[in-house]
Length: 157
Image 1 (tube, rainbow, N blue to C red):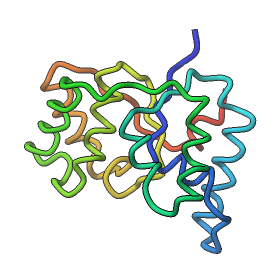
Image 2: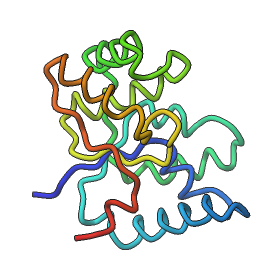
Image 3: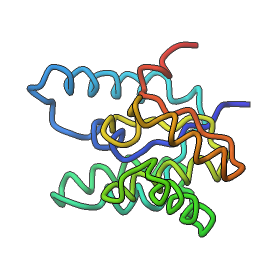
């Protein structure tokens, strides 16, 4: 059985964005293209209604590209259980209030028992300083945390 991976919106954005002149971002884009073309078949890939909403924002042409990519991805509902866990992540200051949508991405992956949450969002999701608190809140609410990672961590066998 394949491991499940939840793609947070930054993955879809990097996959469809114009090549960046920033070296780090360009490297992440190349990793994203490589993973999408050569490694995603090793996983059951999922996203959520929240990813659909976020991907549909901004420049209409780019939004259409992002949404087209998501047509081949299983889309999870955003349910009350996930909303409640996201609220706890914010209330217990594991995720800042201004990043409530990021808390919801984390909560959706956890509630749906997704093994991996892949993201390029280092500010509020793949943030090493925040991980202990995020995991602590999730475990205190009787859930098992998803492994939050970048696509680089999902390139191996």
